[in-house]
Length: 174
Image (cartoon, helix red, strand yellow):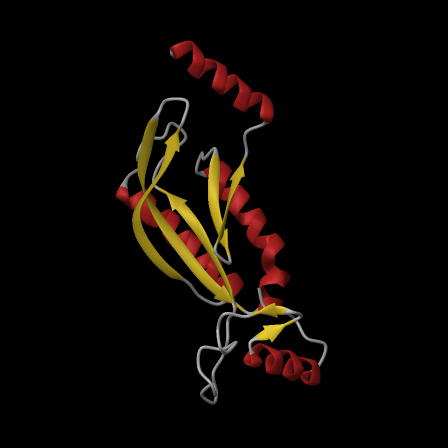
């Protein structure tokens, strides 16, 4: 994650240390902190990456229509554009291992990615989280995936008691 600097002098000092290959006693594997040295003039940096995973299933884990899926994707694209300034969307297949049933569940999914400046993200993150949680309920999802800076988070709306009940039901089947 990008560090917010108090002033330009502090930013230059940190960048100088990073460009030398170390910072705070930690060795930086990259030779430079930026992809190009020097950076081209008039280059904008959007250092924070987020992605929201849009499922093509309903509450019963059944696939929804292509029209409904496209509508979910558009809603997500519009919201990320409104909050972060833009998006990139890729449609593919996602999967997860259900250990209780010893089976891999595969389903169509869209990954809607957005890049933002640090201040913009932190200013809008509560609104983004609220929107994701609302869509989770509206779309009938037990959990929904959200990626921040390469780390995946699942927002699960089931209570601990509900999860334990589901586990007991699975055990009865076996």
